[in-house]
Image (tube, rainbow, N blue to C red):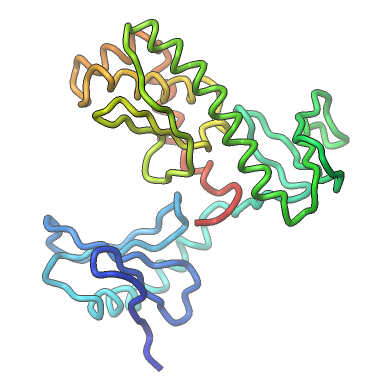
Length: 249
């Protein structure tokens, strides 16, 4: 039996390794001098980086040789939390328990009181199989509301004019700003404390004036968002945890 095989295109390839259920992504990098291996906490996948001179077979052999190391790190990843009845997820930095009601033609609601377990609840109507998509769509809509408000505030404060705002499930970054002024954000920011979402909004608005991360850029960010350092530290320490909630990559 072959231990590995290719699944995708030359520019973005994947491997299947016998005995490993996690997705394996192979990346080629012109600056890489040797093969490297890591386990992503964000995508919960295994990433192999290769020099341009290495082929896919060598990547498979390299990974197979380090299989126990990979398995150990996968086991130590925080558990995935699906959107389902009785699961606890963060909303604006506070834990909320999901309660499926089965009711039809109702909107998702936040129960202002607390349940028997001492937590606020997210009341989700509809069939259980609809919960993951309905809840993700609702969270994305909540993120758009909060981001729109904070983008408006920072834009006015800095005298800048943003373009179109997009909210989606981007995993490589929390926000981005295009050369046309379009801003894009991860809906998962709605699970972080509000000051973290506020910082990401300020960060991308500042890019409307400075498309870099130089001193002038950071001066703008800190001028409009005094809690910048605190938010950066929170994202560095806890941001990856937000990707374990909901649908897996």
